[in-house]
Image 1: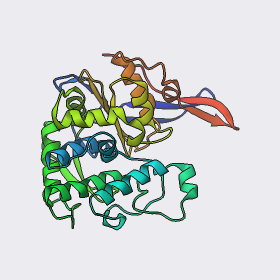
Image 2: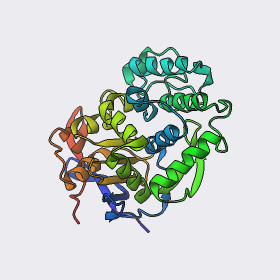
Image 3: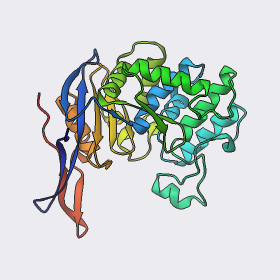
Image 4: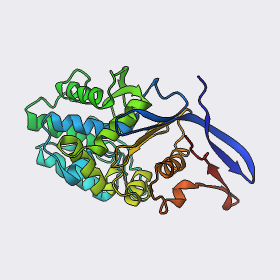
Amino acid sequence: MTNPVLAEVVRSGFVESVHRGALVVTGPEGEARLALGDVVSPVFPRSSNKPLQAVGMLRAGLDFTGEDLALACASHSGEPGHVKRVLELLRAAGLAEDDLACPPDFPLHVPSMRDAAEPRRVTMNCSGKHAAMLTTCVQAGRPTAGYEAPDHPLQQAIASAVEELTGEPIAHTGVDGCGAPLFAFSLTGLARAFGRVALASDGPLRTVASAMRAHPWLVAGTGREDTELMSAVDGLVAKAGAEGVQAFALPDGFAVAIKIDDGTKRACAPLAVEALRYLGADVSGLEALAHPVVSGGGRPVGEVRVPELRG
């Protein structure tokens, strides 16, 4: 199946490039209400998995709420406030930066990257998730050694939570960029899971949703799309992933999942805004995300354009 064109890059009135992909909107019961492209074949959701992994950690014994849990769901920018809090989480569990299994990396935040003397594990964007995984092991009395291995009891518990939330068996298990297990399932399953998290009235799902809604900066960082989306749309739960993935859900349980075939993320934000508009959300504060600028000679000469969703 060839996925449709979901975005056009327009320069000086000329379509320069296109991005094909798939997009699904699910309702409160998890059923597909709108499907563009292949929304049933497995994909790697990358970091869009993190809120689901956080649910699994809470069920496995993690005692996090609020800011700490938001950071567990984060692909943070490595700004000083992110790094300070990750180090505090590690210290509280009797652990150190070297206990993190994620690889050293520079911050995503450009000013912080310029100030960094060298790549560190704690400035890697997934360090909050890894600190939470380690803390889960400590609090549940599980071994921390090899916590990132797919056969570790923690990862088995997370996999069970992912399957329950998506309503699908995991189609394939790989290794994410941070070294943690990565689970493949359909875009429909991803949207369904986000809808369940956003709609929950209590329990671990509600705890995750509340943390992300209350602390969007910790989930991403200054100027990042997830932070902007959640700050602008009341009650939204949003999490992007690498290779052109975006998932989000409104508090009424309507949810969206997007995957761009070529892995480029620039189409995700305008598609997200258009999908929110389709769902009736107020997107008046998201104009910059809705129309990313294409520059030429240091001035705007075009934009990334997405179709109006209908159905």
